[in-house]
Length: 127
Image 1 (cartoon, rainbow, N blue to C red):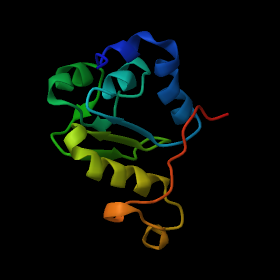
Image 2 (image 1 turned 90 degrees about the vertical axis):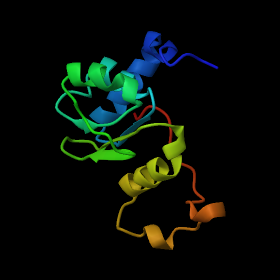
Image 3 (image 1 turned 30 degrees about the vertical axis):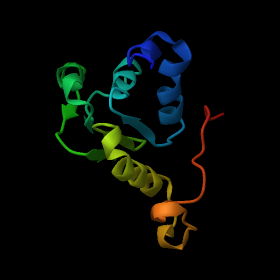
Image 4 (image 1 turned 60 degrees about the vertical axis):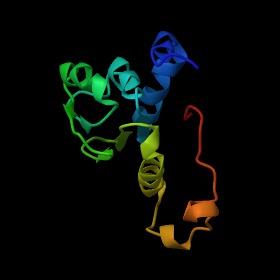
């Protein structure tokens, strides 16, 4: 298992959230992932959540930390979706799908097991 801080040392990992934000795309982070938001300069003046032990780090970066399963902050040019821990994946994934949904047609999407969207989420650095 990789330590949560390992990604912080990788320049590509630090650039990815910024690239999505600059393109106006939603940025999502769960558990210790919001540390990358701090390193990318995306946490300040935003509401978010994370694994509870990161609270002071995020607040010191200017974020408002909320004790919720999922927080969706739409105050900036891009949506910022954060979640506490892997146990919150269902709610986290639903928030991501909602952010990616255009036209409000979520109920018409084909669904896979458990009623989740059957489509894959886009990935990669936007061009």
